Figure 1 (tube, rainbow, N blue to C red):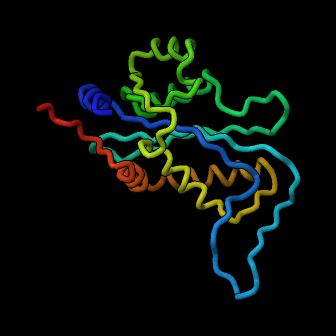
Figure 2 (cartoon, rainbow, N blue to C red):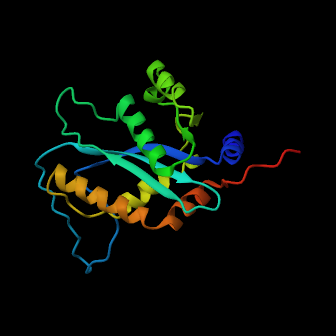
Amino acid sequence: MAVGKRLAAARGAWICFQDEAGQVLRPPVSKTWARRGNTPVVEVSGKGSGRVPVAGLVCLKPGQGGRLMWRTRLHGGRAGERGSFSKDGYIAFLDQTHQRLQAPIVLIWDNVNTHVSRRMYALIAGRSWLTVIRLPTYAPDLNPAEGVWRWMKRGLTNIAAHGIDHLARLVKQRLRACQQQPGLLASFLAQTGMTLEPELPW
């Protein structure tokens, strides 16, 4: 991570933390208030299946407000249907983010299979503006994008979606709300214990 911060400072790049999450039709359960003896119940139809995969990038740069980039897709639960983003889907997402940020990107993501395939290495190598640093496969405590998912899911607690399209709209509403609060992204970085300033060599 220290190398990534030095590279970003030298190139005027954004540091972008990537992660993927998903939301299913069954709502997250949360505590709430109710009259004694009356347990709150959220009715779920039980009809339909599937999930809404989300790919996110928490983009940070010293002196700039944080930016959240995201993409969703629908997974209907059909046999043989891809449940996550493809390599080409990831690269298209990164290309779009680069166009919006108008600056080089230091990408920090984990070692899941999609990220370390030969095709992904080739796609990355063809983009001079992109530098990749890999986290361990399971390192949620080092990735501020995990804070985005916790915040998103907290806003979906005890809400029963009427179908996969309705669920996708709810997820997008939460992500747009997060985008409008740059201070949230800074707080998610703070929760990791990391900073954006490169360490000084001694």
